[in-house]
Every structure is written in structure tokens, then in C-alpha cells.
Image (cartoon, rainbow, N blue to C red):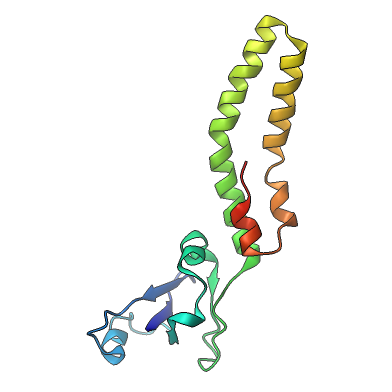
Length: 143
């Protein structure tokens, strides 16, 4: 199955998925005038799951249509992952703040130390992103 990729004005890539009953030449007419596009085989794209998770990190070489090298930019994917982790850990931070407050009210040193250790672990979770070198490793990271 063929798909059409085109570079939008903001630099991100859009993907057109023509229905099977539409010829590719007709589908190309839906690309905004003046924007570069590529017709690629769906098999040459990263998995749908990876595209969905890292859509704004998708890149292609529009200058060589015979070998567009459609890929996910790992540096951009790392930034996307850091932002995802920040969002996911927010509720954990909030819950831990309550535990820390309660431990301090109880003057329970063991609980205070545990809550502080958890706070530090959550704070440092984005540092793990720098050590990940593959898309699969980034997808596995959790706060």
C-alpha cells in the first residue's frame, strides 16, 4: 500500500493514507500546492505505533525521492519522551508530596526518608532518556 508524505510549512511531516479505491495520482492532488511530497510504500515507514508516539520526530529526505530514508529522529524522540515522562510523573509527585507532608506531621523519619528518596527518583527520571539509544528503549521508560 502506498502512502503520501509531505513536508508541512512548519517542517513536520504529514501522511496521507489514500483509500484503496483512489488512484495515487488522484490522492496526490490533496497535497497542498507547493509543498514537497513523496510517495512511499507503507512498509518503508516506521511502525504505526512509533509514528503515533513520535509523530513530530518523523523525518524524510525529500531531496532523494528514490531513497527517502523515512525515520524517527532519535534526538527529537528523546525530547518527546522527556515531555511525556514529565506529564506522567506529575500525579506521582503530587501523591508523594502528600506522603511527605503526612510523614513530617507524624515526625516519622523512615517515612520522610522514603518520600524524599521517591521525590529524587521522580525528579531524575528524565535523565534516563539520555541513556536510551533506541526508540524501543524510549517507549519502555516510565516514571
